[in-house]
Image (cartoon, rainbow, N blue to C red; front, side):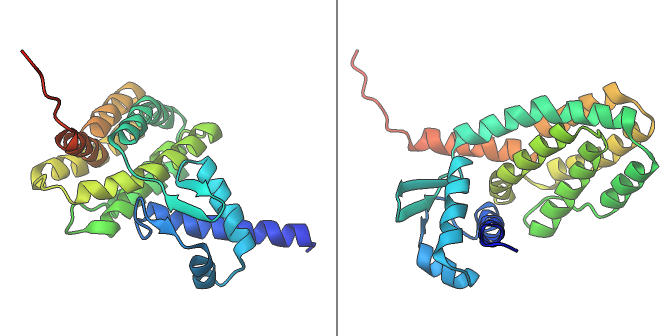
Length: 233
């Protein structure tokens, strides 16, 4: 392997590890990135880490104030709303395509993922989030639309930070039980090749999802923190 490939592979590894630290919340939103400390923890030189930081900056996950001063991008209601809107636009279409294009292997993959589902609540935590994502990826992968799958993968990556906020909300068991049952109903509609029905249920499911609840909570929080303007009569 030549020097260029070595550099590229180490940069890709740094990118993958740093991106996961951000998306999982291990590096908190707004926190400063200590580059030398992080490189030491990753057991690599500073050069591939800086390459990773530049890539993640272009994705909006890192803010680069100066060459040596970078921080994890803050989370905002505006970004959460944009991610939700894109998902509402894209994923029902992928679900509809899945109903028409799925093969036996796709159905098996969706069924296996459905069997591992858990209510996405603070009790089940990360295990529930992982199982939830695996199910939805099995569904939209059955669309066999490579571009759509790639866009949804990236969308789910970025939404995971907001999804974890939803775990903190006292939403009660009923909404998450409904959410859990809808997954199995989507599976049934895909098996029946009911594309329109699968797309509509996917749309309802997303509109009432944990991400939607987290988006609403962030909007309420930001409104509460906004300065009150004095008005004169």
